[in-house]
Image (cartoon, rainbow, N blue to C red; front, side, top):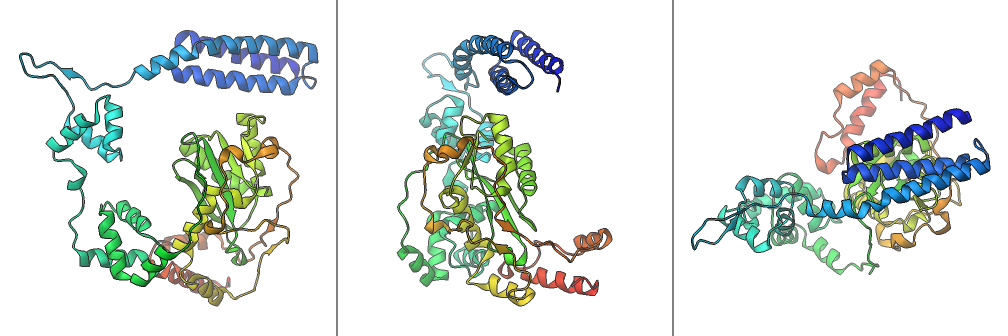
Length: 441
């Protein structure tokens, strides 16, 4: 890029930010303007001595930093206005000796309840007391005790038995979350009693199992820290699982099974999550080469001197390692059935992918030594180098389908079909039979 084009772009950015600040004084506009100006400041720092000579770049940086300080001076006032703005439940004066009351409709409470807000959160949103919200919920017969299902114990046992599918590693809270996903609200007491009736031995083993006492995990809020990692437990069948999870809400932003461990695959999944949930403030990854593109993008977008890409040991990546433990115990493994079945379907050692001896170990959730995010990253936080070797090599798949065969395969087979207890192995067997008819395998 020439010096003239670079200066014109900077000038266009300054004019655009000035126009937005003069026409709209909203908090969101102010925040986005400061982000654009800080990005422009990093670009000028990079161009110093490369595109623009050093004295000129220093003068431009000084003027730009003074402009950013002037813009920031209006931030506290705008933030204070933002706090006091928002919805307040209107107060109705009834006159006489009748006390005034807040106007809160049944539809408002029903909408907030459908969004998953508790009574305390509803009170904060409506700017009223908790007792006021509780009285309204009781008046409209919307207390939580009225939303629980009246399903019988026998029917509940059958439903939970189907969800467990013989996996004694799943606990009551996981089962209750799966029931809520089916819009079925059951008390914790009933779920625990049902699991004791179904498999008392497994319930006793879970109660007696030794759990690590870990330090508290603290993070500012949603999209503050996002954990990324890859799981290689199925790599002998050329399957690598890449996942990402939000550290605050534990929302799984992406989870994808691929036939390679390239950085382009991880980057594509990360950008899909960015398009859906936004750009996080920081990401936490290991030193694998598959994470290079994501770390480079975060350092460019958020800045390389603030810990935008934290890199460290995989076993210290707390949230994602817990996800792998839940995924493996709850979905991929049922007392070794998946491993033995995959070996019988594909063969034990044919086409195994090789992992270098120095690659970092992958520990289950019970073996993970947790670490607070403020202490993670260290000196690696600002690294942007791209020469880390990819430690896992997945052999290229030799059995490829044509576009017509792939369309037929997609139309004929549903990957979510079959009984839950079969873990999709019957679907895999049918797909292998279909591919055998095409002389692919």
